[in-house]
Length: 314
Image (tube, rainbow, N blue to C red):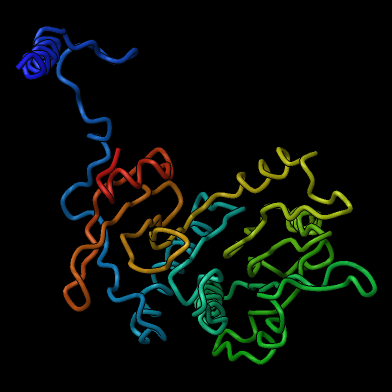
């Protein structure tokens, strides 16, 4: 009995503490009822788009690819044309057939998207140069990123339709831009071990002047090597360079890495100065749907914020 009375006393003290202690708000937050921090990020009625469903089914049906081609190309074309065009822009497009980290990546899908963008830019007689970086390095150490191997050859064989005379091909470097060029599209520029593509990008930027350059799915992360190329020294400047390019389109699916199934939602941005949209996936198979949960005007939300909204965790 002494044991049970001791236990009751402990429970009593705990109850007393919870009921009598006043709530102390965290530093920086005014006293009173706590307000959700993301009230201003709730979408308005009618916001958002209808994202295709069953995206883990590959190869994708033609209408699914078409949806992404239209969504991405329209956002890019709006951003680099008009009265105040953006001149240094990038797009990240990672639905399954364009995600190089997955095993269903399809270079044909990537190049079909490039063709859609180029043909829309050339629709009114503008000249577009589609660029893919050449080999880097010297001698036996010369090479290309695996994801770009053979891409230049495929570009040479592509059918550009009625825009054929307005679209030309090039590599990446200061000698690429020509006086007649109006737009430049760079396909997935990336570093390789021992060599950085950034110096070539800088040279090309300088030669292009204020003409728009569009990078699609750039991979400019550092790849350290034994000869200290892309080492810690200068990393801040390199990251600053990457971040100065405006991200005018972004689409990626949300997973619990390292797995690519199931899909939990999607992150989307479609246009310069537009909000970042966070979608949560509901239902299964044919009953799937993506609902817009939040829209962030200030920039891409953090991983913690995405987890909190999608998984309901704090």
